[in-house]
Length: 94
Image 1 (cartoon, rainbow, N blue to C red):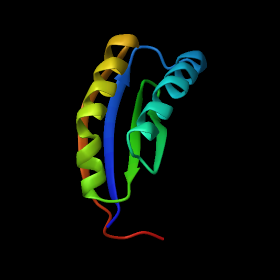
Image 2 (image 1 turned 90 degrees about the vertical axis):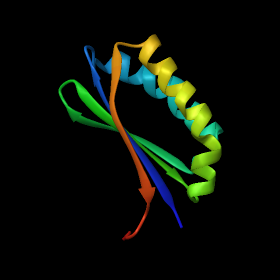
Image 3 (image 1 turned 180 degrees about the horizontal axis):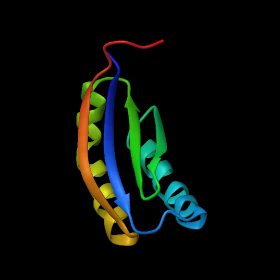
């Protein structure tokens, strides 16, 4: 069954340039560790979330250590702070 992780972030800079730099650096990294898809979603003036799709829970678990490294890198390379992270199996989709 498909599996999703969602991380919520705040930032002091959500300029177009910062968003592009984060997107261009980190989305390919997330895909390279086994994600089947990833979206960055602006949720407020200075907040966002990253929704990452995996084929199943095992794929997400296999990627979890690398994802932790990617999140740490994002927080140190950009003015971003992770607020929370959630994960679970997809129980409905259209």
